[in-house]
Image (cartoon, rainbow over all chains, first blue to last red; front, side, top):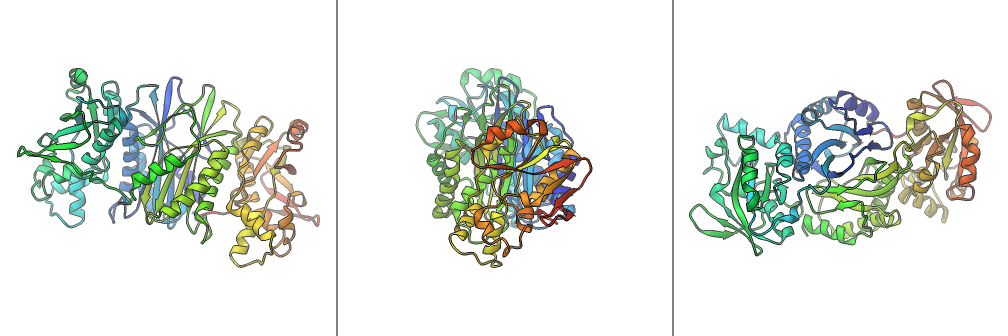
Length: 320
Length: 320
C-alpha cells in the first residue's frame, strides 16, 4: 500500500468535517479560517515508541493518547479544538497498525469535533507528531504567567493514576483487578479536560495541564508568574483505585511527581472562588483547591504529618 | 543540558519576532492572529535521518533544508510565511548538533521573517517535524485541483540538480569541482520559491512544489484537476553544472523523476500568459513553459528525438 493510499484512507475514515477547514488533506498545505475576534491556538506534541509509550502499547491506545495529549494542551489555554495535522513515521506499511491507530485517534476526534486537515507519512522509527489547532476569543486565553500571589490553586480530577499504572507495567507494583484496568485506562486513554478549560477561562488567572507531574508543571506557573506556593498535600484528590494501592506505590510521591494524568492545574483569585465553584458544582471532573500561591519563589509542600518540605522540580525531562 | 534549557536557547537565538504571534514559546500552546480577510495556510513536513537526509548530512544543512522544504509548501499555495512549530527528536542532548541545526534553520527563517513560535523536543531517533503557518488573502490560494485543459505548464529554476548530487553521494557518479559543490548546494540548501509563489498566484490556475519529482508532482495536479498533459522534455530547464555531467547521470531521467529540487510547477491559462511573462521578466528564478494540459488522463512526454512516451508515476513513495 502506498503513502498516498494510506493518507486517502485516513481522510475517508475520519468522522468530522468542519466549515472552518477551507481546504483539507490533498494539497501542498491545508487552509483554515479563524473566526473574527479569535486567536488561533497551536500546539505540537511528539510521541516516540518506547519513550512516550511503554513497550507493548496497542496501536489504538497510541492513537487515542496522542489525540488526548494534544487536546489537553489547548484545554489548558481554555481554547476550543478545531483541527489537527498528523505526522506519522512508521518502519513499515502495516495496514493493521494504521487501522488500530486511526480507530483510537478518530474516537476522540469525533467526540471533540476535530478534523484531520493535513500532515504527512514517512518511513522511519515509529513516531507520532500532532499539531493541534484551536480557537479562543481574543484576550481570554489562560497563560502560565498570570498567577498572582494569594491565588487559590486547583486541580481537576484525580492525580497519580497514570503513574501507578506505569509502575505496574514496569513490574514494580502488583495490582489486582479491577483496580489494574481502571488505572491502565487512565494511562492509555486519558480524558482531556476541554470543557473544564473553557468553563474556567474567565475565572482562572493561570492554567497548565499536568503532563510531567504536579510539582513540575505547577512549578512552570510559579516560575513564569514569579510567585511561590504552598500545597496541602493531603488535599490532592486521589481515585479509589489508587487509594487501594496507595502504600504499595509509595504514597504521595506518585500524585506529586508522576505525569501523564492530563488533568488541569490552575490558579484562581480569591474574589472569583465562589463564582467558579458554583459554576462547576456537580460537573465532572470535580475540581479541588489544593493550595495557595504567595510571594516568594519556592513550591512548599505541607505534608499530611504537618511538616513542610520544599519541592524539587522533579518532573520528566527528556535530556536531564 | 535540559529540554527546557535547549528550548529557551533556541528561542533566544532566533532572529525574528512577528506581531501576529500573540504568544510564542513557553506555554501549553502558542497563539497567532490571522489578519482579517486571510486564510491561514498550514503544512507539516517530517524529515528522518537516513531517509530524508543522506547519511553524513551536516546539522546546519538539516536545519536549512527542513525550513526550506516547509517554506516551499506554502510557496506552492502562493502564501506568505509567518511562523513555524518545530518538533525535534534527538537520541542525545548534543549542544553542538543543536547549535548547527539552529544556524541553518534560522538562516532561512531570518530571510523570510518566520518566527519559531512553538514545538517540542523529545528523546528518540533523530527526526525533525516542522509545521509552517502562512497567510493568503481569501480566495487567492493556488490549489492542485484547478488546472483546465489547454493551460500552459511552467516550472521555475532548473530541475535535476538535487537528483544528480544524490547520485554522486551514493557513489554512482563522479563529479568534478566546481560542479560538485554547486549541485551539492542545491541538494542540501534548496531555495524555496516564496516570491515566485506570491507573484504567480493571481495568474496560475494550479501549482505544486517539486519535492518528489516532476512527473510525479505534475501527476498530482493532473489527477486532481482531471486533465492530461504533454511535456516537451527538451524544454525542461537544466543548470550548467547538470549539463556538464548530463550523459553521465543518465540524461532526462534525472530532471523528470528526481525530487528535492523544490522548484514550482504551475499551470497558466493561455489568456494570462502574456501578463505573467511580463511580470516575471528579468526576475530570478526564471520560469519556463515546458508543456500544456489537455483533455484526457495521461502525462505524455515528447522526447527530444520526437517520440512520445506515457510517463509512469515514478516519484518517491515511502511505502511503495
